[in-house]
Image 1 (cartoon, helix red, strand yellow):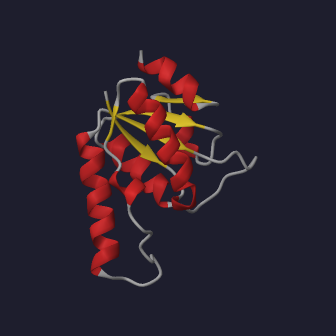
Image 2 (tube, rainbow, N blue to C red):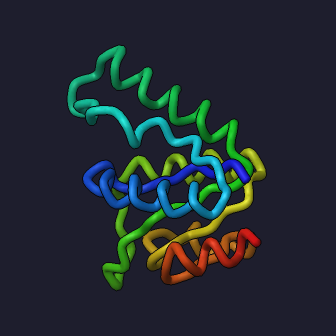
Length: 125
C-alpha cells in the first residue's frame, strides 16, 4: 500500500523509522519530506511553496495517510500536518491518526485513531 506520513518536521527522524517499519511490512511511503532539510516557513519563498506542493503531490500518490499527533490533553492549533491531513480528507483518502487527538477533525467518523504505528500497521492488513 502507498502511505503518506504526516508529523511535525521536528519528528522527521521518528518518521524515518516509521518508514523503515512500514517498508519492511511491504508498504511504500511516498513522503519525500522525510529526506530534506526543513524550509523556513517564516520566510515566504519558492522553497517553502515547493515544499507544500511536493507534500500535496506525495499525498495524491498515497492510498492512505498516517498522521502522528501529540496527545497534549487539549486542542492545538498549529502544524502543517493538519493541513496535509485536511487535504487528504478532502481527497477522500483513508485516514489513520497515530497518537492523540489534536484537532476536532481527528474525531470525524472516517478517521481511525490508534495509539501506535504497530496498531496502524495491523489496520493495513
